[in-house]
Every structure is written in structure tokens, then in C-alpha cells.
Figure 1 (spheres, rainbow, N blue to C red):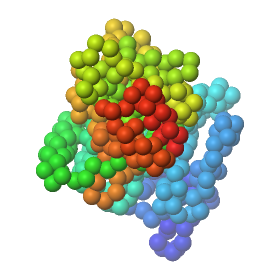
Figure 2: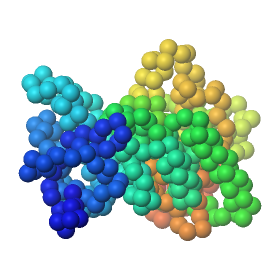
Figure 3: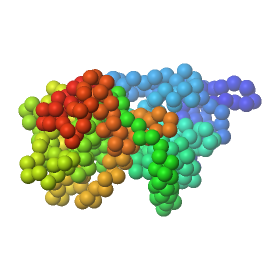
Figure 4: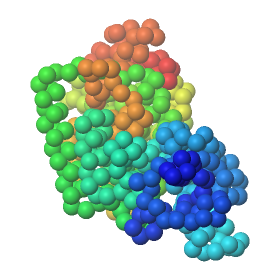
Length: 412
């Protein structure tokens, strides 16, 4: 803490926050005071790494020092560790020192798995940086600050309203964990989200009129999505929807963005065999009314870790249906809380959710859409020598479809 009269900083520890949001600071020399940190000049120095937490050491967490710079501390990706440590310190303070207390704290920490923290931390950090830039307190944050934050996300244009909830949940989570009211809820916030959706819908219509270029989806982006999907173990409906978005992008890409493998895909037309993944082609151009439907087959060995991804998604999808006690419908991508029928445009939302989560952005003047998976797969296929005639769905035969899908997706 900076003492103006002495013109220097004095080290200490923030022991707790009171109901007014003020910090109880205990200095190393034994002095104590209660301060509003939003009005003070202070730095974070090693406060995270010096907290004694044997359970965290056992988990092998990498807690980095801030080097005395608060902005570097937050930008360094350890906000989630700071919040987690604060939560553990809260419980130690309330429960008192004992072996049983340490076990209780360890249980809290174990519940925050890597997949949850990797989402919780960056999203919380983004809000905290916003508050710092606009000189507004982030703990506790006000509903007005959250409304300004939503407005800034709309202005930046990187996040769709359909993908906004995890960002709001991250704010509410760290407030609730540290015993503060959740600011990202209530009628005003709900209206802001709806207003954001309305504005973005109008902007989308304008963009279509301007005809911004639909950009092909690079294989490198799809591989990042693939890896993220395998690391994600969903613990909430939001994370399960994110897993679906990840899986959809990969499946759409490796099947060349065909209508047959889109949002209308049914479980009865998907087959996972010992050696291949296959889909019945119900909407194939020129053959919709043909009595015999062909099957698109992709050998597991043709796409690294594709089998693991399909099994991972289907396991968590089916688990969600089982726990909901609802009758599972035939739609392959459907979750219990979804409407029975998808609009075709929902594919754009899923692709936007998956790519924005990993900050995969299109080039200037372009945008990613459902058609980007088809353009991306075809572009990659051509890049590795697949003839264009084999990429044309209406002309390709069964063996050609198999060869085309296998060759192009080796890039992954």
C-alpha cells in the first residue's frame, strides 16, 4: 500500500473484505486499517505464491509471481489462482485451523477442475481488466458496471449474445465465492442481453446486405477446437453447450460441411464402427428422392483423435439426457433444454461460440459461418492434392467421398 505522507509502499496482506466492499489490510509491521482499494494506490506483490496452501502444491499448480506489477499480474493469467486462493482463505478464516479444515478446503479446490478454471479465469480476468481501464471497482462490482461491460462487448464485436452467459457467470461466480452479491443478474442485465441480441441481429442483416466475404475455416483453427473439446469435461449446461459447439465444428469440417451432417442430423443415421465413422446422406444433391441412400464413411485413422472426440461428446450428451429424466429424441445435436427443432441458422451460432471461445478470428472484412467449414475443408483438400472433382458432392461417388475426406483431414 502506498503511503503518500511517507512517499513509499508498505507491504501487507488483505485479510478480508467487509460488507461495504472495503479491505481489511494487515501490514507486515503489525499495523492494521480498513481501506477502499478503488481509492488507493497499491500493488500486488507475491501475495498469491506466499499464501500457504499445501493442497495446491500437491495439485502441482503453477502459481507465478507478479513481479510487483498489478497489470502484469492480471495479464499473466493467474487471476483464477488469486480468486481461488481468496476463497480458500475465506474458508480457513471461518472454519479455523485444523486438519479437517484443510480437508474441507481441498474439497473446494478439487471441485474447481482445470477445465472449469481455464474458462472461469480468463473470463473473470477480462472483466477485471475492463474495470481497471474504466476506473471502476471489480470487487464488489455493481450492476451498472456490468451493464457498461456488456455494452463494451457489443462494441468490440467479438462475442455473440448467445455466447455471453459464461462471461456473466464468471463474474457472478467469483462474487458469490467471496460472499458478495452477484451483480450480473436481474432485470436490467436480462434486458441488456436481449437488447444486445436485437442489435446484433440487425447488424447481421446489414452485413448480409453489404455482402462481407464468407471466409474459409483454416484447419489450424479446427485442430485448436478439436484439442479444446477433448480437454473440456462439462460441469454445467453452459460448458456442455460449448462442448457441442466444439464437436459440431470438427464434424462439420471433416464431412465437408454437408447438409446431411448439419443441425438436422439424427442419431439413427450416425454409426460409429470399429474402423470408421459414417453418416447416411439423406439430403445429397440429385439423390434426395432416390430409394437407396449412400453413406459417407470416414476411417478413424484418417483423422487423428476423431473417435475420441465423437465418444466424448456422445457420452456427455447421453449423460445429460439420463439425468434430465426426459425422453431422448433422435436429433444428434439436441440437448435436454433445447427446443425440439433447430433452425438452420443455429449452426452459425455454434461456430461463433466455438471460435470466439478460443479467440479464432476471421481476417479483416470476412466472417465465419456454417459455409466456412465446407470452404475450409475443400481448400485444405485442394492444398494437399485432392482433385476438385472429388470435392464436388454431387459428382463424387462413395469411394471418392471416402478418399476426399480422409486425405484432406490428414492436415489435422
